[in-house]
Image (cartoon, rainbow, N blue to C red; front, side, top):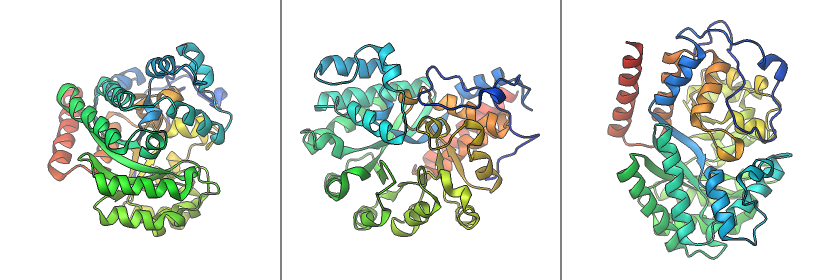
Amino acid sequence: MALPLPGGPVIARPALGRRPGAAYDDERLRTPLRHCPGGTLSDLDAFIAGLPKAELHVHHVGSASPRIVAELAARHPDSAVPTDPEALADFFTFRDFAHFIQVYLSVVDLIRDAADVRLLTYEVARDMARQNIRYAELTVTPFSSTSRGIPDAAFVEAIEDARKAAEAELGVVLRWCFDIPGEAGLAAAEETTRIACELQPEGLVSFGLGGPEVGVPRGQFTPYFDRAIAAGLHSVPHAGETTGPQTIWDALHELRAERVGHGTSAVQDPKLLAHLAEHAIPLEVCPTSNIATRAVRTLNEHPIKEMAEAGLLLTVNSDDPPMFGTDLNTEYGVAARLLGLDTDGVAALAKNAVTASFMDAPSKARLAAEIDAYTAARRA
């Protein structure tokens, strides 16, 4: 879907609390805000806050709020993670992508038993409910927990118990993407595939590959993706975030990717852009994440505008929201201002996520209708 760009992008400083590692173009972002076609930007933010949404690229541990991280750190005092939420802001300031992975794994180390897993999962859903997220495909990395001694069955039971409670009590539907931490190699791939295929939790819909891309070729994971796909799972690897477009081609050809996580470098290859557009292969775009990890230098240089102009099916996501001082509502605001969207354009962006999700057809129709009804009511 080519999103409208009336009069060029409307850009404003995102309403972030802490912008870890950010390198925003402050001179341009101080430009006074102008009106979007559908009203003032404050009106647009209010529209986004109430908009029913789906999120497709958000990480389980990476969604731990400072309150939960501090609580877990207090329970595990041998950790290097600060227990003071204020100190966490500095702790979550990343020098580069490698440092981000280091910090991320230190938070992973706080999840040490099934009770930690259940607490984290349910609290992530609570934060989603506050943003009117109706459906989320949460990227979960079982190997990070099972390798630290949590039995695989206990891990799966904990996330499933939290999933069912979140749907019943919060109205948030969670589904799982089990992903391989690429930096952990083939042993992690084997363990992740085994858990996915043998335990087959009810909420599991897809299979992914995360972690660093540099030095982690996609092709070595082909046999594991083949097994997961044969078991009925969808392929959704990260690709092209910190490497060039060839990594995206590799994800498509070697891992049979149905959606691409990030895909930031796709704009460097016109043939790739045409392929993605022709086959309606969605991209899971995470603007603030890309700035925080230095995958993109400044917000004004983010390729989302080129992606939209190429007619790609774009979804907007938060990735590791508390770590990056953001949330999904903020990311929609960032995307709206970069793309110059009015309320109808933002609603279309929200429906992209529904289209690109792995919900069944009736569920897609219900959420799309809810988005339409909300938009019509706001317009009236």
